[in-house]
Structures are given as C-alpha cells and as structure tokens.
Length: 185
Image 1: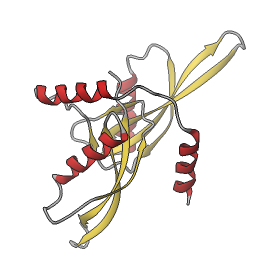
Image 2: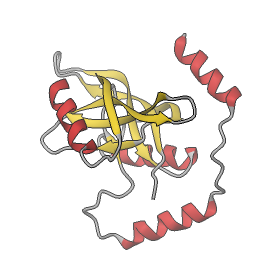
Image 3: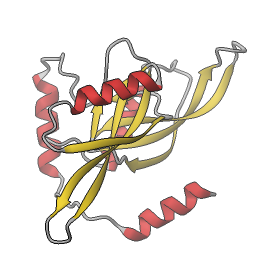
C-alpha cells in the first residue's frame, strides 16, 4: 500500500535550548494520511502529546509532500532529502533518460545519509545515481502505522477512512501554482 505523506507546518510554543525560554516556532512535520482533513486531524492529535493543556497549535499550511519513500534509521536525529536519479536507456532515441525521485532518509550527518541512501537502494535492479543530499527542515515523521503496534482498532479506522475517500490522483494546477507563489514571497 502506497502512503500519501502530507507536510504540515505547525506554529506552536517551543522551549528554546539556547535561552531556556518558550518561543513561538513554525516547523514542518510529515504525517501519513488519506486526505487534507485527516492530515489536519492527525497532526493536531500527534502534536497534542508535546503541549500542555493551556497551549495551542496553529496549522499554517498543509501540502502533499513529494517523497517517494520515507526511511527512518535508529540512533539518528535528523532528516535528509536524497535526490535519486534512476537511469534508463531509451531505445528509440538512443539516449539515457533520468527520472528523479526523492527519499526522506534519517541520519546524523550528510555522509551517513548518503550511506543510508545507498543501503536503501542496494536491491535496485537498474542503474541510479545520487546527485544531491540536503538536510530537510522536517522535524518529525508520523506514520499511520509504526509497525510495532498490534492495534486492530486503528487498522479498522484506517480502512473505513480509506473506503470513504474517492481516489483522484489528479493535481489542481491553479492551487499548486498559488502554493508555489505564496512560498516564494
């Protein structure tokens, strides 16, 4: 089953490590969800664990993330965006064709992110290259299922939600363009 990841920008009060004071921060998080509405609900639920009863969060933006895969690694604290170019030979034109995909890899530094990317791609049959790796601003990732839980109630809730949402993978160009323009300002 392919996951749809939503990047949610959340504004909330966070303890600043340097000064020891509460400061308002806006940070991006990834959440696995079926729709924008569910993404909003899930990020609110996930963030409530980190807040006291009197504190609130404000969700400033939700958009579909362009990650093909998410790969957490133990003992790692940061997320890196790895650009992987899959190389295919086009027999009609006689040229190589590259298709890019982005992986979110957890690591402690860029070298470890590169090593983790190579380990994730080791079973790939075709040729590929890793043209870039950059630290991502993503603070945390909240998958729908962690793989550690045997919570059948959550599975049933997921299936009900999944069946209630019509599948439409088309993109609204106008909304995408307005999102791009607003993020450039």
